[in-house]
Length: 420
Length: 149
Figure 1: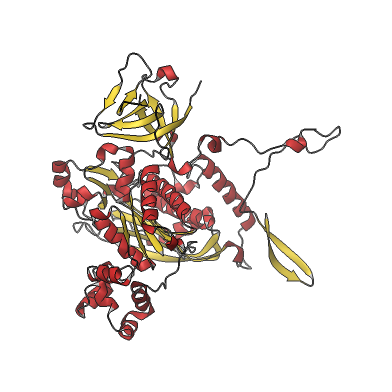
Figure 2: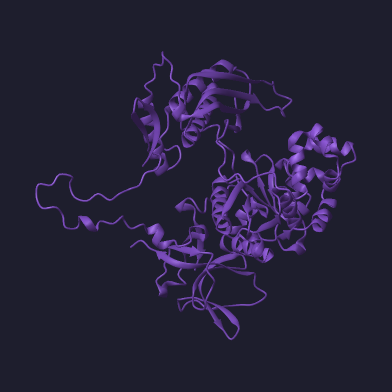
């Protein structure tokens, strides 16, 4: 059996943990730059606030209903997520952290216990010990566990736990489950399936297998098998190394001059380099991109990206910044209001398989040593305390985060204040 | 340290070392001794880790800062740092971070004749009787107090 444990309205729950007065009240969390809604409490959902709704469009609803609004505080959510995952890992020999707020647990062999009581214990423990409510769906496959979890969440009377373990209960659940909500079936496929009168997950299961294979490849067949209770998708306990790393941000205010954009791009390149070093790999290719705000139809539009090939794959901040600047210089044009820039690194290989070039003039050992010192200092003193000059300190381009909550768990100056 | 077999060449084997994991080892005395070796050398232990001592359950432990005077008689003063464990069950006379009617407050929990009281430790303050009308939750139990002298 597999369990899918999913935190209820995770970002909103993190904010409520330190402001319990918001329990039972509508809470929303906005994306970077406070642009649009990325998380809603149940109460906010009931007010009709859509996922992805631009903040300025729902101003009236917010004011009228006294909705609590937060900028996304990923430092806080990341730390609380780590606590939840650590707690969950005590309940199973194998855990797959699927996203910031969900994890699969492998409960093979747990069938001899009262599995429902066990699930209730998981819910109780995470809710009490960390203050984050969760829902648990349990089933013979991961895809069915996802289904069970949705049912547990949707129906208040299930109190956060739902188990699918026999043919009858599975079929009944699939009959009421929209095929578009099935894990692994995207928007395109559900549109396609709807055309052939396949609307529920049960319709999908009852379709001819060969037809599915022909039209949806082996991935579709796998989903079908999983919905029938035959496990095909295994646990992924160690996340695969990233094949490409992207760091990009929208600017808090639009930028037209070269310098602040170059500073931002240098910062993105440095972040990519740090991420590469963390997974002990190097990148041989880089894409730098900039674009204007496509929603501002009144302004001149421009968008461009450029591919930069590195002579030797690297993870040095200095080198990556150098090539990012070369790239930016080639695509930057004066006279536009830029909204966003970014750096993507790809062609990622292990640090140990580095192929140097005969004409390489860079002293790689020295660079490596410098980066090691840099990482060590920054891990001690805080992110980006020591930086390459190009990263700058002015941060004109920085995020707009007007409603940011304190970093209660990661900064000693931000911890909860308790009156005695 | 772990050694990876990297290349084997004519019977000679070269190893690369993996330095990704480091373990700190306490260093005692100077490396070159002219005199008698330190008799304490065999009793060197790793250093004391306060995190480990003060935080038994890292996932459920949070820090909070004190504001106010109502607990001064038990030695809890303004700006002290509280180590709060949410996983512990409340018990009679424990010191807890409570949330009551929109505010966090630090008090001693007292259970008497099926009633719950929040007890201050300062005679200028009155006990609070918690009733069903209050929006109340015991947020976490205080396990340690860290104070700067």
